[in-house]
Amino acid sequence: MGIGRLLIAIGILLVAAGVLLTVGGRLPLRLGRLPGDIYVQGKNSSFYFPLTTCILLSVLLSLVLWILRRLG
Image (cartoon, helix red, strand yellow):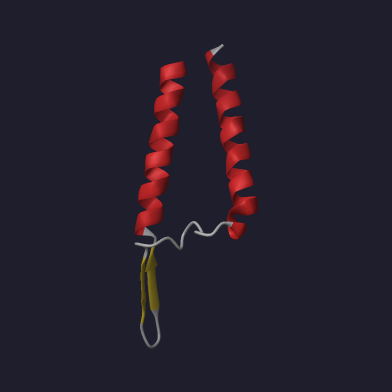
């Protein structure tokens, strides 16, 4: 039963990620362009580090894994 629940959870996560990517362009705050993301542009180069996006995704993934651990 454990592997079945894991496969179902992975499937749900993949569907959620697909929906987020599909409708993500229509959201007012785009993932990867949140306030707090670092973007520096020079003459011939640019540097982009999505700091806020990384923190947000880390918190969400930690929450999902915590919930899955509690259910299993």
